[in-house]
Structure formats: structure tokens, C-alpha cells
Length: 176
Image (tube, rainbow, N blue to C red):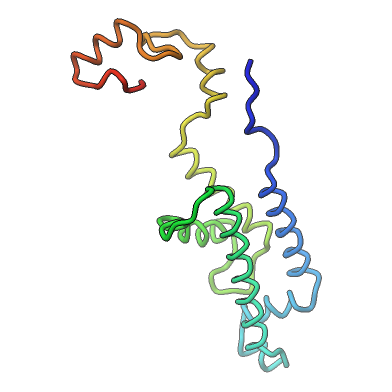
């Protein structure tokens, strides 16, 4: 059996876990976190209670921008390329839908960092499961336990499958 290099916990997952734990601590155990929830729940009541709502909003947007920058650096290091379309398509929809599915309110005042991570993981798992193919290691283990009905092996199609592909107009260099 060959060694599969994609096993183990990646550095990005460890960084994500550290950020989630740190932000959960800030949100639940500090005065700043309580102020953020209060401003998110009712800004006018927070202002009347003596909380500087504009300062809280600016700090929260600064933290959000810093987290987006860190996420961009991690995405660029994972993809080994940067492009204007990187992060496009459904990324923003998934970023909003994940926490909402997990119970975070769009109107503010409710939610937790761990539930947002759970929702994002759920959305990511569904999206990944619907679009991905098995990895090379999984294909090897799967192909070792199934009969070769189509005449397709590790070296391409066999003679019968090659004849079928030629008669149907599929190029013979294509992998089945």
C-alpha cells in the first residue's frame, strides 16, 4: 500500500481552532464581548446604558477585516495562487448561511462562535459531498474491492471498453 500524504490535521485547522477558541472566550468572558452582544441586540438601549456603540462597531469591523485578511492569506497559501475571482461564487452565501443554520440571529444579540463554526462545517460538508470525487487513496481502496465490470483498470480502459469508447465517439485517451 502506498502512503497517502493528505492524512492528519492541517495547520489551517489548528489556526482556525485557536481563533474560534479565542473569539469564544472574548465573546463570553469579557466586558467587550458582552458589549458586542448588547449593541447587536439593541443599539439604542446599549447607547442609553452608557456603551459607546460607535466605538464597539468600529472595533468589531476592524476585527472582522483582520479575520478576513487572515482567511485570505490562508486561502492563498492553500491554493498557491491569487486571482480576482478567488473567493467568488457561493463563498459569501455559505459564510452567511452557515451561522444562521446553527442558530445565530441575523438581527443580532444571539449566537456563539462554536455554533457558527458548526453551521459553517455543516454547509461545507454538504457542498463538499455534492461536488467532490474520491481522492486517489480512496479510489485505490475502493477499486480493490469491486469487480472490474467496465474493463477499466489503473492503466486505462481494456480492449473491450476501448472498442466501446471508439464506437460511441468518446476519445480513447479519456479516463472512465
